Length: 254
Image 1 (cartoon, rainbow, N blue to C red):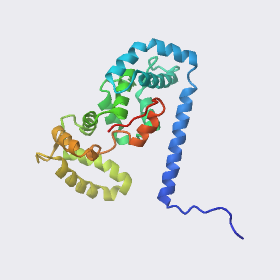
Image 2 (cartoon, rainbow, N blue to C red):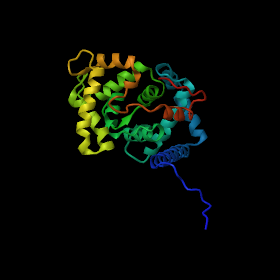
Image 3 (cartoon, rainbow, N blue to C red):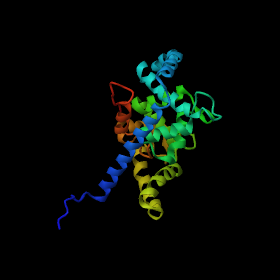
Image 4 (cartoon, one colour):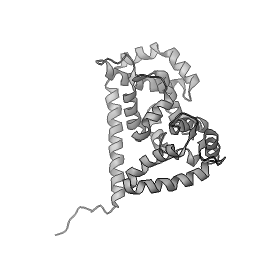
């Protein structure tokens, strides 16, 4: 008896990637729909009038046009409306909400680095982020220059805040990613080998540490090494997909 259903002969990894992409697309669609339901057209108009001056200021300070800033601030405001029945200050988005936003909208899923990423973006204490910080962060993520991204990534990797990435910091950064890929037993030796290779490439003055000058000089010559210690920025596909939701003229910059 013949079976009319065609069997799926794709490799397991390909099937899993496809399933993950479908889940990501569904999550993004649900996220956008959820935000759209939080605001009516009259409220949207009032919000735009209230923040006209801020929109122009942030357009001057970022890589966005005033129309793009306007669209991004509407997303911020819709997220803030979820806090209407909480103790969060009216009109503010929490850092936890912004983390969820980066996960859903820009596929930034490396939780081991997310706290450091937030510290690089906003050194102010507290549970919320301002509209200004939100726009500046997205300007970096979506349209940032290579130099802006170099400064951001180094700040994330410089866990001690002393201007260098020492070997113990390298070990911590690389070990987190390798444990998830190869398991606890194999990770430590693999990390030690990777540190030797990376140090030879980045430690220009051969002092056993990677200074900001070392890192910047190396990445300017080879931008592929920008995120050598872990994901600090969204990938190009996620940037393009999200940019299309608020900008009619989506452009990618590296």
